[in-house]
Length: 125
Image (tube, rainbow, N blue to C red):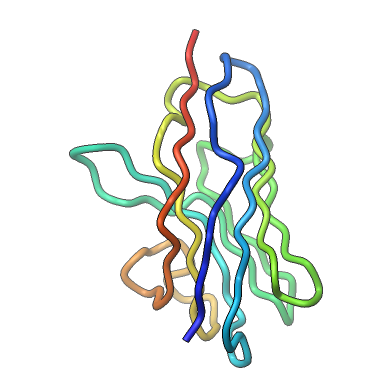
């Protein structure tokens, strides 16, 4: 079992920055793909960014490319999401997630096994 706890959400104005963290605990052996998702009420959960530990492969949602960076510490204890130039449409509950590995479905929520409880990001004008 892997436990994930997000932090770092908050309110920011358009153009601002936020850094989200996700603390992982439990047995992370065999867990190689990590990701951030987001969800707004009434809509499905969408993938924002994903990273594969042993190759460093990263995937980003088109709408956040160039503004967002995902990273993971070497001990696989903390996942990060640095978000810059935030837009109103970035407002959502952000979740971290993890699974075994592979590139297939890297930004598809249904392929992930472990989930955190989420942290709210609100961007206002």
